[in-house]
Image (cartoon, rainbow, N blue to C red):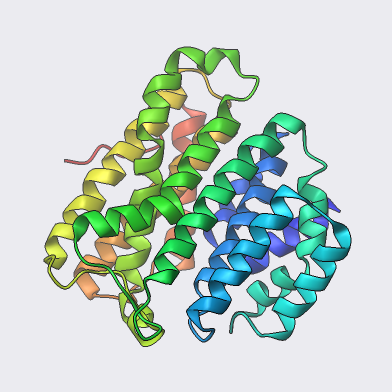
Length: 302
């Protein structure tokens, strides 16, 4: 069963397939399943070829399954969603077809993890549905910087809050750092989402989304992303100073450093620019070496 979950992870995420395996158990399994649940909701939100009403309906149906996991309903809905072709991405389509398996795996977790993850996924799905409902002619256009931040919170800031809850479960050494981490958790998620939005802006427009408000200079969004990534680094270093397991520190450091590299490339070369596999490998090696030496795994940036 674990290998099936890992296979789904590899088919649906490049970054998290790299970072989740470094987590210690049981956090690794909790985060892997939580990621897949968020990815299910994201797939419905991103299904721009579906009418907004259909996407909102799917998000609502998914929320109902999280609240009342009836296996027969999960099988029926999963088959309906998969038959409707929710995505052009083969991995996402396979994930939707395997919703019953993901839910079964989810509800086998410890009750405190289930409760926390479920609440956060439901909040995110509701936030997504609210933005889908605003689509005008099947196109979502964000108005201003605060609107962009609200969107990032719904789809990524909540993920940061959820991850923080899982990191803190049964880890007494982190209790003193809890307020500091919680205060910065959503900003960490916002940072990663902003980088993705800047990177994918051209593709998003072609698929019926416009996450970069026309009223906001692009430079202002880049500046916000840099400030947020600085906060993500502070969050990671706080975990390291508090004595969090190495895997948790590495899990946070990797996406933060990959996001910095991506942001710099997009700012130089424009939307669509990506870091190479060789660059990803080099960043991972640098993070590993820093952790081996007990040094900060995130670079200090002005």
